[in-house]
Length: 595
Figure 1 (cartoon, rainbow, N blue to C red):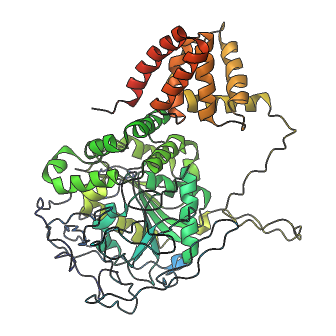
Figure 2: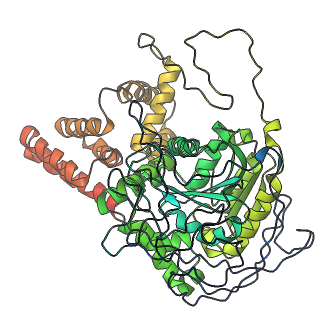
Figure 3: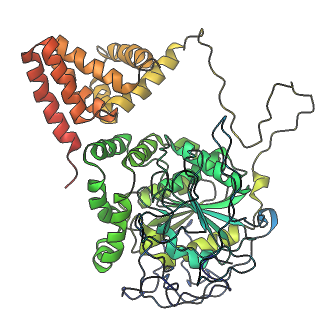
């Protein structure tokens, strides 16, 4: 059963008792037909789409009370609907063991983890959970709690902690999460977009939780989750698996939006036996360019998250929806404002490095690619790239939706997810995944067992073995692009000819493949040294590019100013003055938020 009801969930008619009164919303319109093509998913109710058409539904959100840290999804007065009842998942995706209200968290290496936690009793006036239900959540979100507590909200008048939500307080190897739905149902994991919380999926929960045990998680530093930044999409996936491992969840379906979709695709590539079925919502095999996301990190580092919050509505919603639903727009803005800036920047860096275009053919699980027709962030072109690369993937184009399609067109998204997971979940995809033959010879006692479908870490290269020239060139190209940016490196390569190409290869191989790639200094420190050396030598023609690099490497404008003041003392006032003029122009260009 769902956490929000102790009886079988019915079509949403009114907000949860104790929630805010619903605000008037635009009347629900029939869902237009998704994109029709050879690999498109038919629209609900379209001829030949489902055995029996069913009426559209309103997708009203559960009535989560507002919390001090991250508000729940605003209510919208929408008509109810009769939900689709897809066949129950069967076969290899049998129901997971019943969820116990709390589990021991995964401890850091070498540190003992806390013991099992006990679920607190329902508060006075609270409905008792049914035989398979967890207690009713009392707050919109789990905020960071003092060490040793399970979670909570701040302020004397704040509601009590949501008993269905867990916070991985102080443990960077796990994620903050919550469950909805029957404890004995198969688990469906749902991942959020950058800058949002698990509440972006509120309007899908009433439908999906009737058939699956819904596991939602927050990104680090989002929605009050502990601010332990993750350096890559793969690290986010590892933390998610660590959290699920602690709960005893081995096999699951996965749906994710934007960076949440990237996590799902990464898991399907690295851990295919864990993922039963996959839905990529507003996702991409490569998100824009690395320069764009590193530039976003520079802006946040300099100006905070207000520029991202201010421009979120135009990135996430169509103009008509934003004008008609001001409460939802404000809710979205507040989600961004309450995000930890360092974790937001780290997520931008993770997206800058994410690129699975060459690996799409290895995704072997049933995959639905869902995108808003008016998405300007990861639009239909990126969706079609995913469909073209992933074997047997299907495309669903949702009219009247932008990047946050689950919020803007909840009925269409819910119906498409219901149909995809209720059919794909019955297929035994594990048979299509190659399994290594069993080795009968006894293994050496010191050799650890590596499970099939897990990628073992690459063996460390001995220090005495120098990289080959090709290795140095490839590494140098990678580091040079990360530090100076794709645009700069592309411009240099475009102007190279037979006379200069050997020099550019020399610079890439030795300056970037050897010196900049060494572990002895971090990139911030190398930027400080480079800026100083350029001012000292009077080579200001390279100062602009390395001022941009310093910002991308984490130096703030104030720190760059201190570096140039230091050079004024030891290199001379005229040299520093000329450097200030160059750096000032670059800093203004790089740190000015978009209008």
